[in-house]
Image (cartoon, rainbow over all chains, first blue to last red; front, side, top):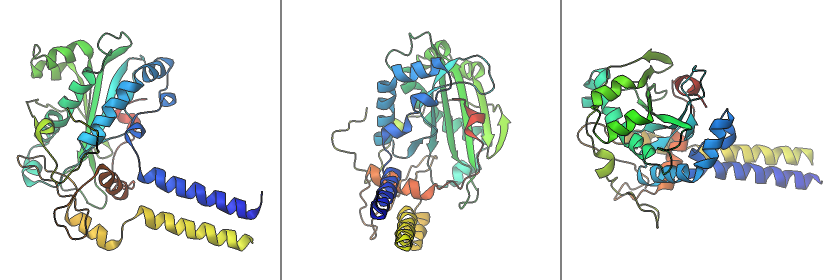
Length: 228
Length: 86
């Protein structure tokens, strides 16, 4: 191979890298099958890939202020030895600084974020075709992260609320046969403040139709995409 | 020839870095009009993707590019494995 060929190849590789970085699409937010650490996880990721892609496509096109983080897939509770797999999404909710939000106690902030973002994500996960009757799917997990109010804009501190819940209680909560307070009690819930694990927060859950009703001014959805 | 390859590689590196980062003016503009919306009662979205700032049209690609530029590994957070396990 000539040196010119080497230089050309190098250039193509770099350009391809730039293009790939600049144009992440819905498929990039689904965790690759091989990144699931057990055969059960990989089997679920393979089986439900079309549904996960559809989920990612919805978030990508219909909720541009929400970003899926760390891959949509079938995950586990940290440090738990059992291979119980949860249909899981981790999202970053992007929001401008808001004095009213910042003034709320931490539990209310977390409650507001979970009510606004967590519940709709949970609802959509639970509606994935085939999941509810699949014995290999133990439950659902949603992690919502946001920038801590008042943190350094040049190096923001992220706050994360992560929950895991089994399928039966989630189904009951979503169908309103289980009160929210009981559902919260039944779930594994952990809050993280920056690089510190805080633990459980006494959150409340209320109805919030923001995701279903808010339209981003000026946002032009890609042709052919429908949000519902 | 080796020096030419090095020069090409250096130029590509510069192009990569400048392509991945906004100009300082764009950064200032972006910071003044953060992309996102408030979580309080009144949502607002102010992604400013045109230099005039008039009647901005935002595509999903604009959002992705802005996001890529802004979140360049600078935040304080836990390791993903502490939150959820693959």
